[in-house]
Length: 242
Image (cartoon, rainbow, N blue to C red; front, side, top):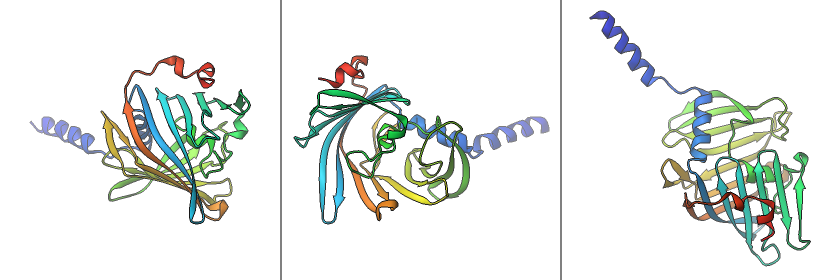
C-alpha cells in the first residue's frame, strides 16, 4: 500500500512539474505553426512623427517554413512579394524591375520596407532552430525565457528575452540584444484571439527600434483563415511573378 501511494505521489508530482525552458520554447513554436496552412491579411504602419506610411499585404504560410508575403497597396509596391522557401532561402520580387532577387544571409537583418521590422522578422516562423532557452524568474501570467543564439547561426541579435503567456503559449514581448549586451529592439504582440484549433493570432505586433531613437512600426492583422488548402505551387519563384 505504501509503495502504491509513493508511485501515485511521483505521478502527481510529475504532472504538476513546471515545464522546462526547452519545453516552453517548443510549445511557443508549436502554437505559432498550429495549422497546415494559413492566410493572414494585415497592414504595416511605419510611423513618422504624427503620420504613418501604410502598406497592405497578405501572408500565406504552409507548414513551419514556407511563407509568401504579397503586397496589395499602395500602388507603388502593389505586386511586390517576398518568398521564404525555407529558413535559409529567401527571394524578393520587385515588380518595377520584373525580376526576382535572392537575398543573402547578411541582408536578412535589413529594414523591411523602411520599417523597424527586418526581413528576418517577417520570415521568423519558429525560434527553437536558432536559439537555446534558459528560464528566467517567471511572472504571475508569463513564463520568461533567456534565449541564446546557437553556434553557426548568423544574426544581429545573439541574445533575446521572451515573455510567454501561460494560458496559450503565445509570445507577448521580446527584447533583442546585440553582441555587447545592449538592448536594441523591443517587440510586443497583443490582442490574441483563437482563430483555429490550437492557434492564437495577435491583433497587433509593435516593434520599437532603440537604435533609431525609439522609432516605432506596427503590423495590424485584419483577418485570418486557417487550413484552407493552400497548394505547394503558391510557394515558388514562378508564383512570385503572378
